[in-house]
Length: 312
Image 1: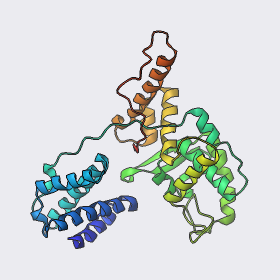
Image 2: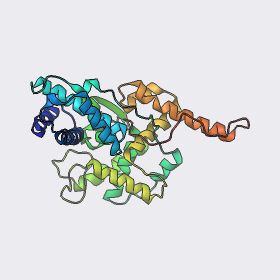
Image 3: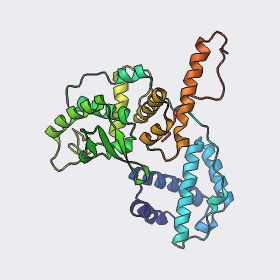
Image 4: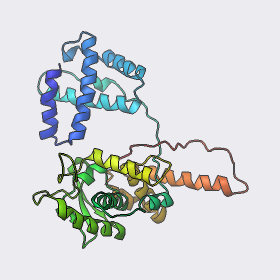
């Protein structure tokens, strides 16, 4: 059964033009499901029934998998069966009979303004620190996703206009804006970059060591550098690139109140996705009210959670 997966992955890469990260997720989810099917002595795709999939879900829940992960696997299976039907390797899609699991709605956890300023306050005196400052300032100034940041090329940057051209989800392009601190950090980085970069390399951000020296930096490397910077700056919370995106959105919305503008700058296809930040701001207001108002209910309000989330 696994032999049918590789052509499907090629289809995702060349026809649907999905990212390598997304394709890896498809492969992992399908491989896990196929192992379960084979353990049930299932050899053909049309032998998979809705009860089979429900048993798979039970197995995943017993392994403490989260509803979000299980829903992703069901989505991968649904897309895979659509492909199999197109290729006449299956005649029905059993996943259409399975409803998605309910997932708790969690609010993102942005840094507050003081934490954000403290994170950005460090000496920039060598290749790594100058590059890291540019990355952090760009993430916070523009709200771009990490996948969008690593794909940036020199030609995407317009320092004169204070903007970058971003290739977002679904291969959709948008313009993201840059503040003066980000522009200053990027100008300093370009000077440093030109010393070490291969003339043929077009990536905006590059590595400076290892086998990929002088080449485009990876998402994993940025995640590690951002995490280490949080530790170095003494912040008592885990820092990752997406938290800077959350911080950008939350601080901008708090200052402007313009939800539509925040939606456009984040590159959200739906305003419903952006509205999570209005809930976040109300949570902050409720917290201030409960703490300061003499008639406030001092007990914890219900209906809100501060768990982190990978909201896109």
